[in-house]
Image (tube, rainbow, N blue to C red; front, side, top):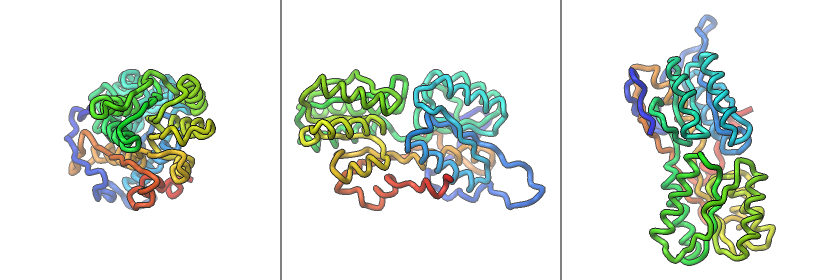
Length: 331
């Protein structure tokens, strides 16, 4: 778990604490340039990252800092994400908020950023490095546990379940997968995992192809677990198009417009939904808080998640997670 940087006091930042006005300056013609915080996602195409971006912009307005958004187009382009970090280090931004694509490949460029006195916060997915001021993310293993127990509830404790993993090296999805598998095997012994070593890949097209291959290989199974948005969409499409939805229940991760619609129409049974808006918000606030001698921040911020089904999707909390205010903050 990332810890504090040398010389920076450990800070206690409640996730939704009332710190919005701290550090904000009034308008003025001769004011100095605003601090710059670069926010680097794993990718820029999925709805999840748009919510992260919106949360970062909200925090940037509250902190009166400039938010610079840049990341790889595809969520397996480690070299591009490394290049983006290096570019921002050379540019001399004041802070970096990053969702690392790989828990080891990003260590060197992040250390170089820290050596250049750039404050770094990690969001979404962990990294094997202790130089960040905070790690703001879902407890991904626990999210996998929630998904496993929901699958067991839906299947009434019995059946055959397929797991389609995302990509190798992604700490967040790996933790979800392991939380799901451990819980099924330890707590629901009458549920059989028929496959746990297949990967969908970083694109929706790749995930759809992998899901189609899985359905061809296994003609009958009762449940499908997806650890992220593209795999969930892939399962929803392929299982429904194959006419197998009545026999195969789907528990997935994350929310997009198509998944929320599918949930309401019964094309997917349950979604474990994270709070990416709060990840972006908390990461930016944590970086900015280190510049104030009066504020403290937690080294680990759990941004939470919840299981959403057709039955509870209209509750206020579910609506908050399913429909973050993206349009309010992104043009």
